[in-house]
Length: 268
Image: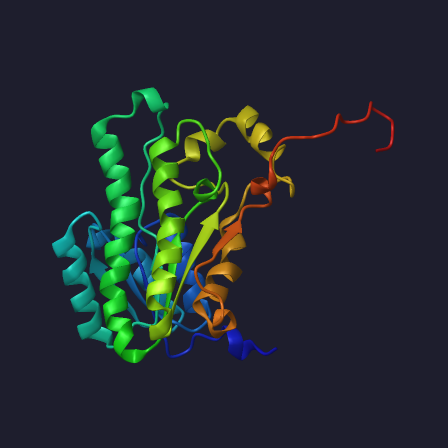
């Protein structure tokens, strides 16, 4: 095995939702592996600091405005990206949102916001970029899911439904587009601190509760995702499609002890 399997030099990756958080970490990892970037956000100005950072790495970087809840915005972004760079090799479908509420308190508008952004937006961005990948008979599409794609949590009903939908969508698109040389996979992070959930991580008791249920005994750190996104974007994953890769420290294995801890001072 050589580094060529993970080398993205000469390729262009489009990362949605790149103005902050994990979207920036995905973009940074791809750029460090050689890819030029197209970055999107609802507010173009929010991308400026990150664009400058990527350019210091010696990579080209194109910022584009995108609202994944707006079909016209998706179509305009895809057309502008193609006109500017030609072939788009990699798509990281990262744009998403959440509203954390008990299920009885979720409103109609909450549901629509989350599903329209996380599921409908993911599909139509993938569709527009895949149309441009097909003529080149090559593409890597990475839909960002979550441990909630496979695991249920209270107060995350619409979010879990959207991320579970992304997992199912990934399998369908992989079947649709494999004949065109396009792989479609889902990268599903576990519990990582982000802008959406930082209030939880400010609660020491909650963090201890979480860590107790993670086999590796810590929440995720952004760099834990670097290898996974580069792997799915590169030639090293060429025969992998329709899969969901959980990067979750093992919490999806169960999270409930099946044995009683031994008394203090007694070896297990």
